[in-house]
Length: 149
Image 1 (cartoon, rainbow, N blue to C red):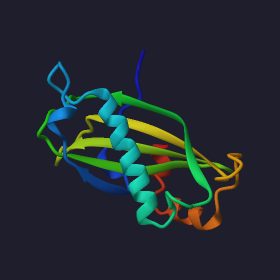
Image 2: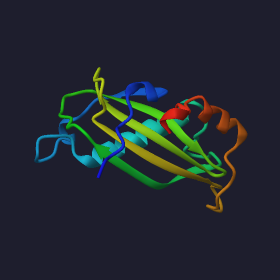
Image 3: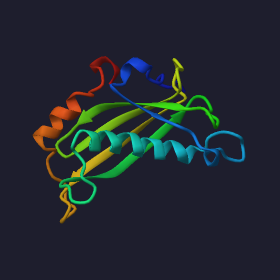
Image 4: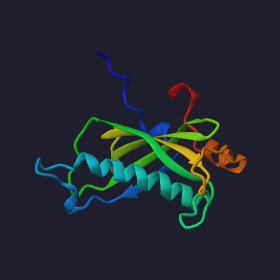
């Protein structure tokens, strides 16, 4: 069974550096797989906040995570800093699919690659709503290259 190769650095449009913590390592001596999902959540939501798309306390609409996944290629170990790359692969009527690359600082190849799907819903009813046009423009600014999708 062949696997699609992980995306290189040039695929990603937004970057965030995150430090690893002593507590991130597990009994096998590497960063535990659950930590990668925390990094995904941090990278996506920090970008949304920085671009005025997420107001945690009162914003509307809000994004609910409906699907996520990760493929691992190389272990990371504390105290290695990581660089998280973010790109938007798809914007639907009410959903956005993000791709997240996890790289050891300065590494050419990713240690892992994940995805994260938000469905945007009204805060009060929790029913899907259209992604606002202003948001679409922001997502387009970090849209993945067409040939890589």
